[in-house]
Image (cartoon, rainbow over all chains, first blue to last red; front, side):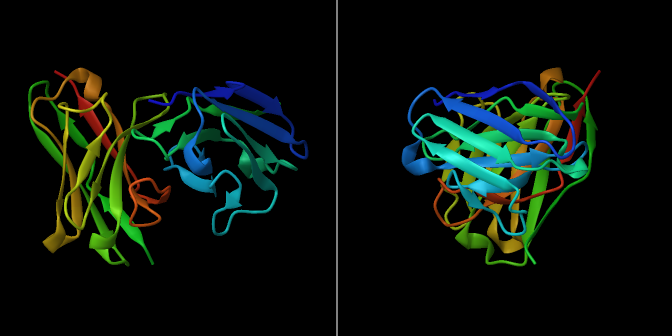
Amino acid sequence: EIVLTQSPDTLSLSPGERATLSCKASQSVFSKYLAWFQQRPGQAPRLLIYGAFSRATGIPDRFSGSGSGTDFTLTISTLEPEDFAVYYCQQYGSPPATFGQGTRLEIK
Amino acid sequence: EVQLVQSGAEVKKPGQSLKISCKGSGYIFFNYWIGWVRQMPGKGLEWMGIIYAGDSDTRYSPSFQGQVTISVDRSNNTAYLQWSGLKASDTATYYCARTYSSSWNSYFEYWGQGTLVTVSS
């Protein structure tokens, strides 16, 4: 089973700043099958990024994904108030699919 | 419009059985996989397993194998998650989600609203 470790656990930033979230895999993620999800309180997760760098439908271009192998990054270029939430990475290339533990992005 | 609508919140006692549902609409139900994800109170997301609606091919996470059963009713466009003997540690919100494609190793593009299961004596 691939273990995904996200860092930091909590990131405190202000609106307008840039956020960089990391996701490291215990072994190489098959074919860049890495997704990022956003979860706001009381809501279901929402797909942001798939295939490591492709934005899902309707996702603003301030969200971008990068990386390959075992190291992946989600970048939010300019934080908006609605971006403060919890973010999860997930690998779906090797069974069982697994999620990282999440990074909480909070307002500083 | 693709929608996954889950059954309502449940309160059960330890040892009881339970079956929660996830009804798909707005797409060809048997062409996709539906997965289940657990979120314990205040915790992260855990991938439990996935089922192909076309032929009921099912894959479980080792952590959940033998603990739950995932099934599908193609006549009703509905997937199910069931327990035969609930434990307090099963208290969580359970989400169903549909894959983007007909491959099991595809990302979850659409999500249900979640079903809160509370197990308490």
